[in-house]
Image (cartoon, rainbow, N blue to C red; front, side, top):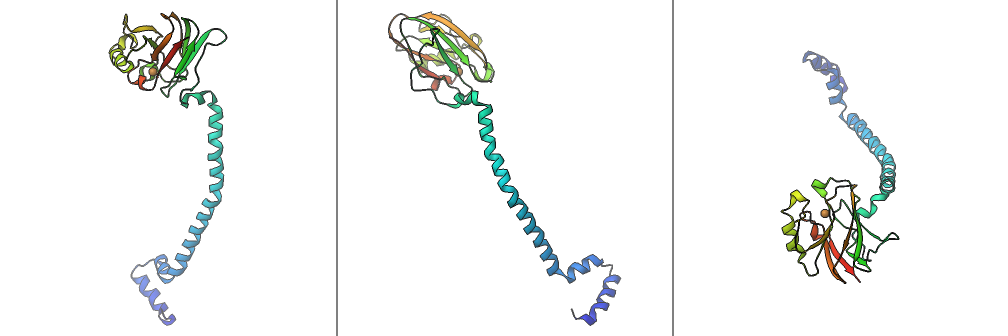
Amino acid sequence: MPARFLPLFVVISFMLGCSSEEAASTAAPAAETHSHADKEAHSHADKASAAPAATEEQQAEPAATAEAEGKEAPAAAAPTATALVPDAEGVVRVEATDMMRFNTERIEVEGTKVKLELKHVGKIAKEAMGHNLVVLKPGTDSAAWSAKAASHKDNGYIPAGDAEMLAHTKLLGGGESDLIEFELPGPGEYPFLCSFPGHSTLMKGVLVVK
Ligand SMILES: [Cu+2]
């Protein structure tokens, strides 16, 4: 706008009730845009410089978490391929996790007398993530047997007196354990599983009596 019209513009603006702020922004749009762009660039720079720190925190966090939850690390692991055998006290110590897993799919014992402890090393209550360990006769169809056991909720999914069931622990919630002793008929391969509904697809294995 030519400078000679400026006084007139100011008067007209005043008369129309136009605020000086609006007049200024209209008169100097380039300056406004520029300062805005500066702010943008500055805030971007702030974010950029803050980002590495945040990344370091994120990198540090998993390590700290893994350390804090070190005891739970096996919980996420799939069962070991190596056979679980009795410890120095003669007890086969089986663990079950919140990840719906036993820590083994194969147990090997010498002789027919077995001491077995099942420990639920997770935290979830037995109503949601209950585990037991049931030993069945060789050749039992695990899937069919589990389907039958599922209707015995009131008894911890244990069909009392079932002809194919040779031994079982209690149904356990997180932090609980049960030690049982039983004798099997002789050498052979005995299927074992957790009879909580849906669990035996993952929670199953074989107990081998040599
Ligand atoms: Cu289970």
